[in-house]
Image 1 (cartoon, helix red, strand yellow):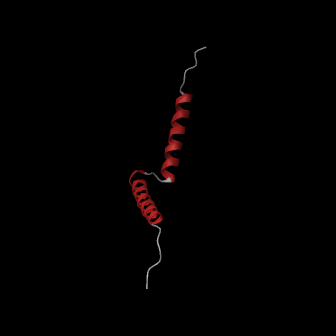
Image 2: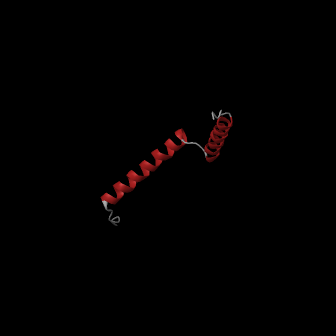
Image 3: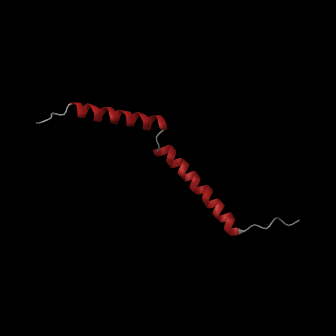
Length: 60
């Protein structure tokens, strides 16, 4: 009626990995942006860059 033998190093590492993943998921929710938000910001930056380039005055 004894339980199975557990390698304590593996159990500790598994527990730590689960805690790290939970912390990473919480940070992603707190600080992360969705793909749509990243795409929107990239297109807005590109549009602003193009508008600035069109407004440049060429001195020749």
